Length: 79
Image (tube, rainbow, N blue to C red; front, side, top):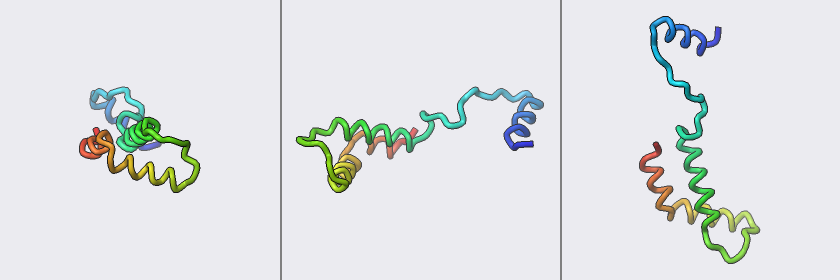
């Protein structure tokens, strides 16, 4: 029997209430939140031309990562 089924049976047998929450909730994953912030910051970054090379993208990613106040706050308090 899978571990989660054993756990669910034990919880039921012991009258434990369980929240109905998806196992991979995006809102509870700090890495997904950081990716969302990073994407938003990059798309809102004023650039004069489209990014063409891998180096241009890397430079922009590093700039946003180290200069974004939203990313700094998220790293200090991931939840």
